[in-house]
Structures are given as C-alpha cells and as structure tokens.
Image 1 (cartoon, rainbow, N blue to C red):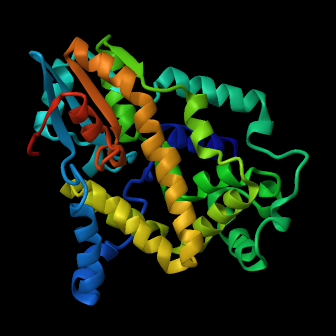
Image 2: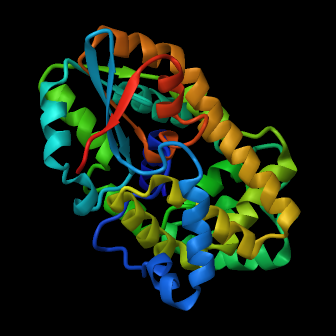
Length: 332
C-alpha cells in the first residue's frame, strides 16, 4: 500500500485527471452519446462553447515585446498524451524556464511530510469511515479497495478527502504511473535534464489545502460521489482523455458535471460542483496570477498547468487577457 499511497500523492500533487497506460481500458462514452443521446451531447458542448477560451491546449502570450507560452496539461501517462505535438516540443526546447503548478522538489517534500506525519492522511482520533458513509457506499468501497492494494479496515481511518483523490483515479492508472511519468512530470524532467529553472506557482501545502474543504459532511459527500461513479472510472477517463486530445478543454468540465448530476440529487451536486470549481480551479487561478504575470513579464517562459485551469471567465487565459496580454491559440 505504501507504494500506491506515494504514487497517489504524486498524482494528487500534479492535480487533475487520471494517469493511465494501455493497462486501462474504458469506452469513450461521450462520443457514443452523439448517436444515443444527441440532445445531452449538444448540451454539454453548448455549455462549453459559452465560456471564453473553451478550446485549445496551446497558447502564445505576448505583451510589450515579450513572448511566452501556456500549455494545458492532462495529468496522464498515456503515450498519446505524453507525446508532445511539434509546436509544444519546440517551445519547450527554446524556453528559458518552465513554470508549473508544483515543482518536483515540492512533491518530494510533501511525500516526506506525509510519511513523517501520517495524521495528514489518517484521522487517528476521529470517526471511522463506517460511520461517515452510507451502508451502500461502504459496501461498494469494500469491493473496490482491493484493486488499490487496500482493505476496508486499512481505509477506515483515512481522511475522506484523501481517499476521494486516491479513488478518483482508476486502479490501473496508479499502477501505470509507477512505471512511467505523467505529462507534467515529463515536462519537468525535460527542463531539469537541460539545467533550466523550474518555477512552481504554489507550494504542495497550498495545493493540498485546496482539497480540504474543512467540512466533514462535504468531504463525506464527495467520497460517496467518487464511490458511486467508480464503476465507470475507466470510461470517464477514456472520454476525458479524448476531449483533451481534441482540444475541447471546457467540455471535460461540462461532461464531469453531467456525470455528477446523474448520480447525485441536484442540490448536493450543485454544492460539490461549485465547491470544486471555487477551490480547486478558480481560487487557485487567482492566487497564481501575480506570480504567473511576473514570470511572463520576464519573457521566455513555458507555462504548463492542468487543462481545466485554462478556459472560463476566471480561467488563466482570460485573467491574463484582462492584464493586457495578447493570447493567441497555437494550432496543434
């Protein structure tokens, strides 16, 4: 289990989506919806198209004669994802420094911190999971944990927020991530191996704090959502990965919302979606902005952040445009 938890930490600290190789299967259900549920399919893409910068993985940012690059990543080890398109590879090779969410050093420090202080993962004095989850969720959880090298007894004292992040990734994904770096790590490896500076937009602790809602009921509700959708995790990963490769970044978010409303009452789904958006996406985007602008103003930066941070009114690209940067999509 120690290896799986360490791998999960690395994936969580990279933030968003699920790393996976050919070991993971899954069906692209969203593409299938085009014929089976055309109105739902159109609704997802209509909602996506309504926000700024909804499409496009790679962008050029220019201001006052300075040029930098912004690349939306998908935290995945699939060769289709980690094989960088030519323009991205070229810009990465020419960049003076690489700007990421969290650096490799920060990830390592956080893993050491968690190992030294298990109370960050385990609720050693609180209520066990069996008293936080519904009997139905607990039964499903007991069935899927062995895939992650764990038992229900081992998970009883885990904080729900951490277990949610662990189980949000298919078990095959964690296994694959032990053998091959996800896209973000590959980009950082390139920068490190060439001796270039890697700059983080936040610390590991700041990132982890975004995952902790501070409300026990909300964290239990999120875990129940992850458990309820676990049987479709590989399908969701396959659908999201294809959207990413197609450059339909906002559609990844809209599809996730669609799936959430299928398994939760509307009020509870609304709450969790708004919380996730405010804490994990928009809130972090705004906190990153001063440091991001500072690095762009130096010129020659290659910025690589999770794809869902790019689109939207409070997305990184729109925030930069509001700061006077000219944002131009680079075709891939």
